[in-house]
Image (cartoon, rainbow, N blue to C red; front, side, top):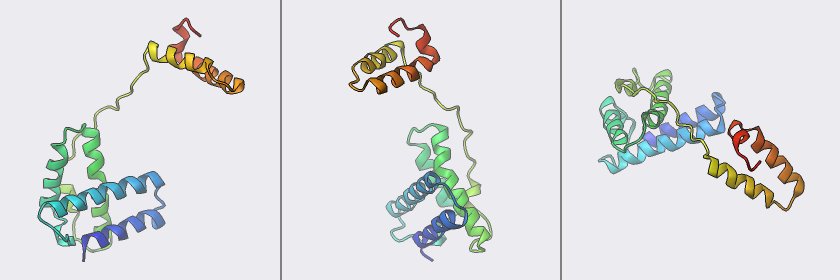
Length: 155
C-alpha cells in the first residue's frame, strides 16, 4: 500500500470518525505531509507503508531536531506520526507502532511575550487616532483592563 493513501485514510478517519478539530486536522495533515515529502527527498521517491519503520522515523526525528527548533516544536512534529502509527495498529495494518521507538524530548515551557511600556503607549496613541469613537472607547477599555497599562501615565 502506498504511504500517501494510508495517510489520507488516517486523515479522513481523524476528520469523520474522531471528529478532530479543524486546527488539529490541519496541523496533522501538514506534519504528515512534511514527513512524506522528507521521505521522497531522502531516497524513497514513491514511499510505501513498508518505509514507515522505526529506523526511518528515527532519521526523520534527527532531521527535525537539527533544525534548531524548541523541544515543544520537535514534539509537535512527532505526535502526528505516533497517532498515525496507533491508527495503523488499530486497523491491524501493522502489529506495533514504529513511531514509539523514538524517545520524545520533554516539552519546554511556552514562551509568553509581554508588551513593553513603549509598545502599550504606542497602542494607546493609535487608539486616540481612531475615527470611530465607539471603537476607540472599546479599545481603550480593553487596554485599560491589562494589568501592565495601569502603571502607564498616558491612559
